[in-house]
Length: 180
Image (cartoon, rainbow, N blue to C red; front, side, top):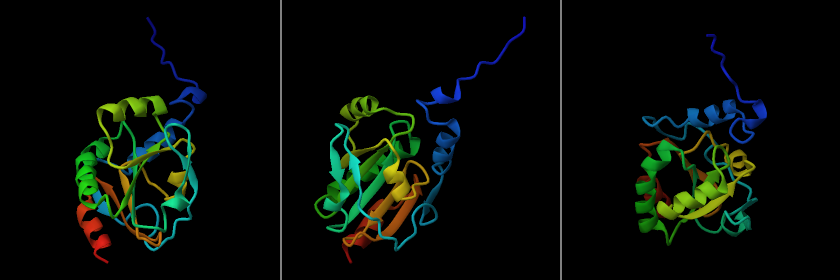
């Protein structure tokens, strides 16, 4: 008996997202990797505010946040193992710095749907305001190398720190940011 391998049509791979893109997205977030300032947007860059949406499809103008107070942006997914490790760190940081720093959790539109995200966060809340990046606008603006990527912006909207991996010193980076 001869076995044949079936292949999904290219248009059906992960809801229309090519598998190559998904692999590239995950490549920068190996669980044992811990780094800061080696991937993504350059330090000193100023991110121009743009509009993104929340899970309800409501527009969120980031000009109302960026450039007003420090901002932490995490690129996140329900399926991301690095994000799961970072969750308690971010929850602790949010408890400590949430009055001084705006926390934005950007759910990437790769391999997950809004409904899945809503069900997930009902069981496992995230630390911060959850946004939906279904079209990749935030990923492009921040040059996100993958999920588990964290960016800190100062009150002027300038990138002062980035990190990837599970060993990020988010608390230390936030402490330095708010002590300025």
